[in-house]
Image (cartoon, rainbow, N blue to C red; front, side, top):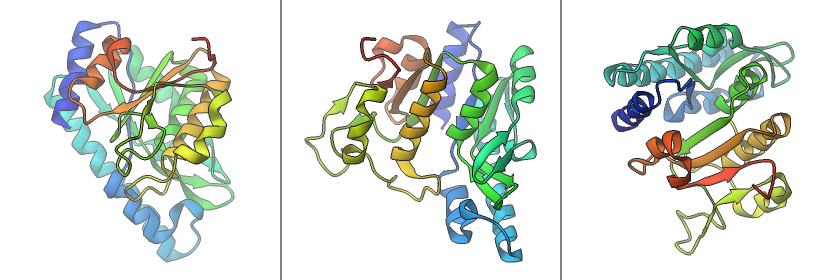
Length: 247
């Protein structure tokens, strides 16, 4: 985490005009509680509402750890708890912290959001993934690039953690969606938001609404890769998702 924070800091120093929103998942912090209590599927009983609160607390604790690392690296990071402003209808985000994030960017802060619980008009409560929150923010912020840094170098022809012969797919467009069922699956860890396949499908939905958006799926474990993705994208290792096959 400290290395990634330093790479972000280096990118901000070399590109002082960079307007950056950082987002992170909940990993073993929030997903374990979310799975135990079935939070994404709905919250009705007192036990489920306890799980809702426990999931929110776990996700917020991880956010504080990341924000502290970013501050230590010299980044004016500001953790924003999405659930305060998030609202959903049957699992679909219908309101989010757009104005807060926009104001933070305008004064030079680096907002840090994360996948969080959400009050839902149909389900009572649910969980909104970081990608779903980004999709809502993109309606107003109109980003040009999105970087999804995870555990693997991108999308492969097979699971690279199980098949050493798997090849990295460097570019994907909406025309390639049919490939997803064969090359994508669930995350290796506990992920109540659907794993890699769901994330890529959400990303293509976002690209459909914002055709000029370019998305890079890459590894955050590869030293220097996030810095390259932020400053010299052509030098970064990963899979680029975009609207036009000719790009």
